[in-house]
Amino acid sequence: MKRLISTIIIMLVTLGFYICILYGEKLGDFDEIESVGSVMCLSCMGLQQ
Amino acid sequence: MRRRTKPHFIGQIIASVITLGHVPALWTGNIYQGFLKRGCVPILNCWGCPLSLFSCPIGGLQHYFNLHLFPFYILGFFGIVGMIVGRMVCGWLCPFGLFQDLLNKIKSIKLKLPFWLTYIKYAVLVVVAGVIAWITMEPWFCKVCPAGIIEAGIPLVLVDKTGDIRALVGWLFFTKVGILIFVIIFSVMIKRFFCRVFCPIGAIYSLFNRFSLLRLSVDPGKCKQPNCKVCEKICPMDINIYKGPNQKECIRCLECFYRCPNIAISFATIKTVSSTVKVKEAA
Image 1 (tube, helix red, strand yellow):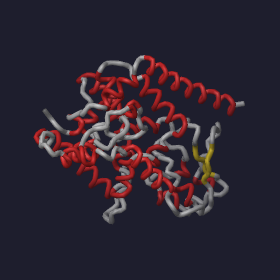
Image 2 (cartoon, rainbow over the protein chains, first blue to last red; image 1 turned 60 degrees about the horizontal axis):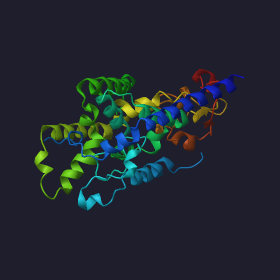
Image 3 (cartoon, one colour; image 1 turned 135 degrees about the vertical axis):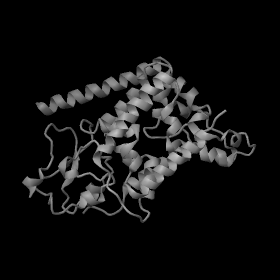
Image 4 (cartoon, rainbow over the protein chains, first blue to last red; image 1 turned 180 degrees about the vertical axis):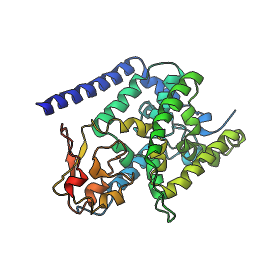
């Protein structure tokens, strides 16, 4: 019984994280990450303007 | 003993080739700007790296903190990876982990890391990649990340044909080079020095090790501790797996699983009872 409850809790938490990703996608997170990842972040590379 | 080869090395090499697979950058120096940059990889992967095809999750996390937004996508991403495999990605996928593994093969004085230093990475995660990034609206972990300088800063300066990039080299660049040299020196002497002390991604995944679907267990009947100690000697994180197979520091490289002479270590999926071996009981 304990094992079943443990399994269900883990599945529910994983589902919660999956919903987080879907909600983030709805808010435009994928586009946001793409736009940031595609620019040259000079300070991240140790370069300065 | 199951086998002597190190499958996680093969995994690390394949992952390095895939994540750093933008080969045209070797002669153009241009950063990849395609569709794949929407996806994060679950490891340190500087998105400023000309070879990088994907985005860095810790860079993404800081980006959301810089904008004062909640990072739903990044949180969900870390959560799913952590819930499935825990810290296994550190052992099997991370190119910077592979770099440290190779450095530690250099013959030198070998030191044991005091365990309390492993708590620094949680401070790095909360303070540097969290609070400071939120307040200053700058990705401060990226500014000090040694993976960033070795994957992005140095290669871009080397392939720069116009001299525009080279002109931007200043104190921050040399600070990062200094941090990289510090990490390299200590990685030669201490196994996985950066992963254990500073890596914020390792800090996140380590919290999932006890709850993830993939876990390890030690059979107390087969384990010959405290006389054997093979697993302790070969462990890249210097942990005693027999004292707790799902400790926070375990990166599930499975070295102990493959090389245990008594085949005492096995996979455990969802279990409610800890299979920790009490050393005294085993003795």
